Amino acid sequence: MHQSIGVFDSGLGGLTVLAALRNRLPGEDFIYFADTHYLPYGDRPESFIRARSLQIASALVERGVKALVVACNTATAAAAEQIRAHVPVPVIALEPAVKPAVTLTRTGVVGVLATTRTLGSQRYQRLVETHGGAVKVMSQPCPGLAEAIETLGPDSPRVESLLDEYVAPLAQVGADVVVLGCTHYPWVRAGIAARLPEGVTIVDTGEAVAKQVERRLTSESHLGGLGRLHMVTSGNPTQVRETAARLWGAALHVESWSI
Ligand code: DGL
Image 1: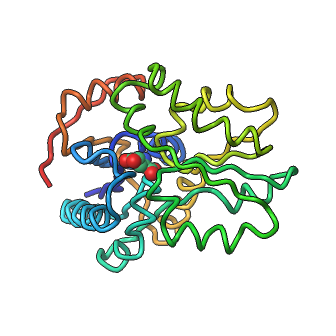
Image 2: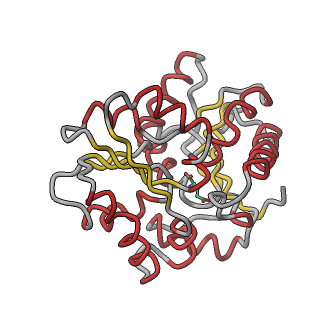
């Protein structure tokens, strides 16, 4: 029997990562858990996110996943090490793409958009210290943005005004590379680009994570499935189904899962 790859996020941001995974690994089976009941993670205490992430990881492993993708920068920042120590399957986590951004900048200024919790984490501080070098890394917290994208929609007036507020400072300091350090933000990539000068490079992590998953599973001879997708949520499945259809552009079957 084929085992699935487990993927989770606080909500539907991780679908941007799932899209890259399905694109690169179309034959794999995926189970995607959206922790919508607890969205957003970004403004919650680190201890809460850690406990929640461990619970979700255990539940997915009990369901027999062969690998776990933490499709959430905030959960990675709070709990990646603990999840790795806790589960017996490969764990692929993601973090803001500061390292590639630093190699791409010409102005010497990189902007990072992420949740307050991600940017305040020790893991992120270490990332900037290790890879920032002489580059100025301007970290812009975006409270409320992930939640507004998911609950009100990427084109809602609230999202527009939050983007005005959060993207303008990056344009002002002359960032020529902007990192999308939250998996919800690729849903508003066009709105972010429209608020930056022409020629600014926008970097996200979906593709890099998909490559890493492929490498990891190939080396462990773990590839193979039937291309199925199973969506589960801690929230209201009808609402999640509607939001997923709007963001994903196709109907997805969503089941309720109480963790
Ligand atoms: N999508 C998540 C991330 O990548 C977090 C959004 C949230 O729940 O605040 O950080």
